[in-house]
Image (cartoon, rainbow over all chains, first blue to last red; front, side, top):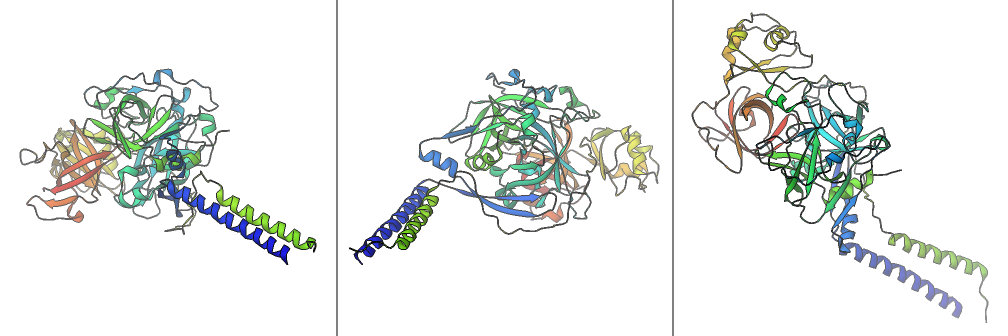
Length: 336
Length: 223
């Protein structure tokens, strides 16, 4: 009987001890500022939508240890690596945004160099009157790979808040260089994700989307890295690369209406960040229609924002890689 | 002194392991995003993989002259009209084509089928064209430093045509919580923004997809 009591006491101690540990764990989780956010997804093959909740534990835990910046590196891919040294921003500030002079530079061979071959033109197709027939009107933007098969772009490229409607599907063309030059072919979306904050209220602080592809093309082309930072990024030299719709192969195309291929050639512009908001960054690099979803990246191909808007003729801006977005996007990077 | 029953000892050992293992699993830090799937919403579960791609259209607005428009005869197919005015053929899948006539008026051709016959003569088509500039002098609110203000013509659902930096462009208007009024100040709503009506659009930023999308704070229906 005495032995039995001893055994019972031991068991009780162990059980109480485990609850104590669980309690301590719960306390440590609550002591970091974890936020929750909802992501809505559309399967573009079946039309089924789902909503999932995510948290910011990764960055919250880092902050609790005094870390205020996290990044994932770029991956250059298996195609011949020719990191475009000319694209490394030398810190030259472009004080204009098709604001005075036009500082855009054409990428003449996107496939030949990283990061350009990881940047794509995106065309989304719609059925706005729900008649089962794809409309003639399309939406065009830019995107970039953030993993083997995940393309990041702007939410408004795939979800129209004016009519509360998803696109039917999107076609991604990596390193497109004109109407016919599609070195990696065209890839169709399988699942598209965006924030519930975008779909429900058109919140421009959460204007982002991820388009999943059926093919792990990123292992060939490479993908861009990303960085979350809690602080100001003002003064950081950046580059915005995408598919501007006002020009084809020459800046003078702006003034000609009959130029074929406008918006199908890749251009970049260097600049620097001028305003760091909590969920958006603003910069002085030229960007126009067609470039929504373009990566805003610093040296080494590390993305700090997704280009989404212009204000007047002096400001370009985009969705910042916030804690939410960083936590969400890390799941897509799986280097071999 | 009694000895322990081996069976009880083994059971006790297993019990302790289970308790300890459970406690350890709860202590594992999960750093990867996780989520729970809520129920599927608004499903249309038919296989959509057969919907093929549409043909792309250009958002370029073309320029023409009144003289060219006047050469169009009544009863000619829209395809032929566009060939005449554009000097080139266009792909099918387009249901609206915009022209700037003599650099000042907007002419909009709308059709359900490009081979549909137009019931209007060239002169009658010209009479439907509308001046792209604000018809009442100085544009109200144009000097607002916080916003962009444009006079525009409605050319489709939530789509307007305006002049931006000397060039005619189209963009979508995101009305959201925008204040919509008639020019006399009376309240209006979205249904009052009709095709070919002239509007003053005030917006704070514009999204850079193509077509661009202007986040409107105010729309004044002028005519």
